[in-house]
Amino acid sequence: MTIKEAQEQVDQWIKTYGVRYFNELTNMAILTEEVGELARIMARRYGEQSFKEGENQDPAEEMADILWVLICLANQTGVDLTKALEASFDKKTNRDKDRHKNNTKLQ
Image 1 (tube, helix red, strand yellow):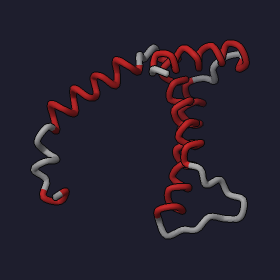
Image 2 (image 1 turned 90 degrees about the vertical axis):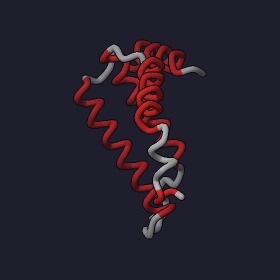
Image 3 (image 1 turned 90 degrees about the horizontal axis):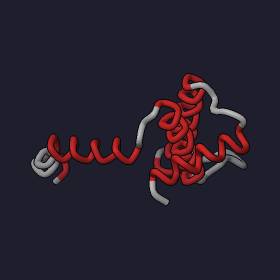
Image 4 (image 1 turned 30 degrees about the horizontal axis):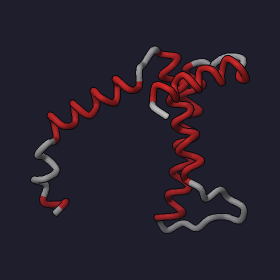
């Protein structure tokens, strides 16, 4: 699935099952909540914390939830995520093409 197709499918799902999009501020709060859920999993899996009994341990589920809400926000605000990602690649390539190679901390 392309990013454009994902944006179209989320929009169709919202129109078919979701009644309407939550407002942008609500979706921003939901996005923050989902990032926190991913952070909890990462802290327990790769950090010093341990999982609680019955706690979700699947980062894929939380990453998908983050992507879903991000796509909702993009659709609501008229952002073409394909174009935005392409622009981000260009920006990072122009800005960082040598920076990381020359970073002694990464050697």
